[in-house]
Amino acid sequence: MKTLKIDVDKCNYGRDCGHECESACASKVFKHNDPLRAALHIRLLENGECRAIVCDQCGDCVVVCPADALKRNKKGIVLLDKKLCVGCYTCVGFCEKNVFERNPEWLEPYKCIACGICLKACPKAALEIAEVPAPSPRII
Image 1 (cartoon, rainbow, N blue to C red):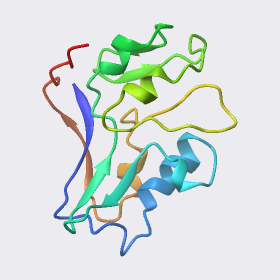
Image 2 (cartoon, rainbow, N blue to C red):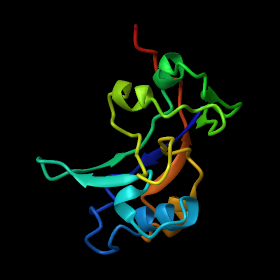
Image 3 (cartoon, rainbow, N blue to C red):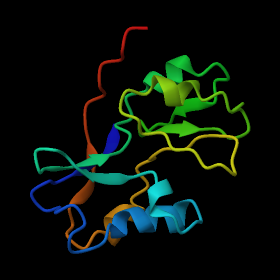
């Protein structure tokens, strides 16, 4: 399956680029200019390392969605069907990685779908779409 990965040796937490990856995600994918509401976030950890906060496509949210609005496509990406989503935010509360975002103007939450827009925007080439084994599902 595919997921977004970060090379922490290349990324320096936006010190040189101002988080262009987040801005590109917000503006090109979600049509707003607020990088804080992007589906990708690069954060500095207490130990000084940076980490990408993105969906690893584990699929746990698919299992708990009462409306069956979350489905995995043939590439392994978990997608949300806006027509089926009822806005209950069960997926948001269940996600241990806190990857779902909320736009106050929308009923449904959103998350990274490994579209690749951020890769093109990253001046450090620190992001990639990688083929990874599917994670083990949580027991619920």
